[in-house]
Image (cartoon, rainbow, N blue to C red):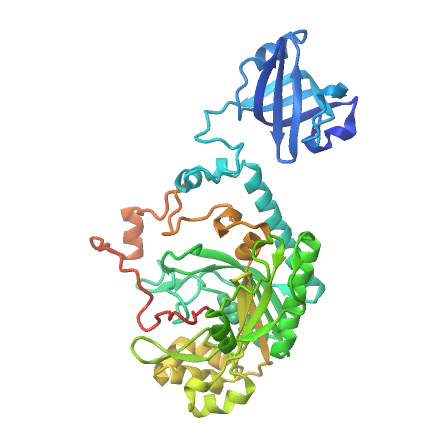
Length: 485
Ligand code: ASP
C-alpha cells in the first residue's frame, strides 16, 4: 500500500490509507488516545480506541518524535471537533494498525516554537532537529522557490547554467582565500573560489554569451555581522551588453520574483532609483542607503542601484587598490585615463551595486575585455609585469583570442531570501550554517586530521599561535567601499 502525504488526506474521506511521520503530540481523553501525526506536508489527528486492542496497546508507548506508520480510515470529524487551524482539521484517521518505525529520545529543545528564544549554539549543534520546526521548514521551502524562480527566469531569457570548478587558483582578489593542499603536487595549493569571476569571463571568451550559476562562494573572512564563510550567489555573465542593459535585466528578474512569490510585498519605486556613490555618501552617509519612506511597513521593499563608484582607492600602505573588482572596466569616458594611468583617483568604475532596504544584495560590472586594459589595472596597483603574468597570464592570454564585451552580477541568494522572509539573519535560510567564527557545531568542523593524512600531504603543523584577525596584507577593506570579486 502506498503512503499518502498527510495534506492529501482530506481528499480521501472514507478510504483506507497509509500515512507515515513523527508523533507531534499525544493526549488522552477518557479512554481515547489521540496523536497529532506530522509529516513534511502537515498535521493529522489520529485516533486510537480500546476496541482495536493491538494498536491501542502499542500506542500507549508512543512519545513525541517517535516515527510511525499507520494504516486506517480517513473519517470526517464530528462538527464540534473540527479544527480550522490545520489543513486537515475536518478529518481524522481512525486507526487499523500501527507500526513503530523508530523511537526517539527527548529532544534537547522544543520544536513547537519559532526557536528564536533559544541559544543559537544549541540550535546549531542539533540543526537537524531545529530544522523540524515549521518556521525553518518554511524558510527552506521558500528558498527553494526563489532558486527555482531564478533558474526558470534566466532559462527563459536564454541563459544556460554552467558549473565551474571548486578547486581553483589563489589570486589576489578581494578577500582571503581558503586553500587546499594538493597531495599529488607537494607544496602546491588550490584555492576555493571566492566567486566564479574569472571562469565566467572565460565562458564569455568561449562564446556562451549568457551564463548563470547558483554558485557557492567561499571567503575566509573574519566574523562580521551575518556573514558566512560560504554563501550562494546568483552569478550571471552576459556578452554584448552595456551597463544599463544589464541593470534592466536584473531589475526585471527581481521585480518578477517579488510579484510572483511574495505578492504581499510592495516595491517602493519602479524603475529602481539609480544613485551615484557620491550622492549616496552625501545624502545618506552610506553606500547602502535604506531609502524606505516608511520603515515600519514590513512589506515595503525599497530597491536602489548605487553606481559611479571610484575605481581605485589608497590602501593602508598608500598603494592604489581596486574598490570592488579588478576585472571591471572603467566607465567609457575614463578608459583613456586608465590606459594612460593618470587622474587615477578620478576614474569611475562601471560597477553597480543593488541595495534592498539598506542591505547590499549584489553587485557587478561591465568588464575590461582587452589584455591592455586588464593589465593597466594591475600596473596601477603596483604589480610587476612578471607578477601579472604569473597570476593573471591565463586571462590576459584568453583575451587575445577575440573577446566579446561583457558584464554581469553576483547577488546573494541567502540575503535576498532572508530579506523577503523578514528574517534578521541569513543563517535562518541556510540549512547548515556556520557560527560567526566559521565553526560547524554539529559536524564539529574544522577539525584536526589524521597524522597519516598530514604526512601524505607533506604538511607539518606548528604549535598554534593566536589568530590575528586582519585581511591579507595590502588588501585592507576601507570604511567606505569594500571589495568583492
Ligand atoms: N564577482 C562579483 C562578486 O562576487 C560579482 C560580479 O562582479 O559579477 O560580488
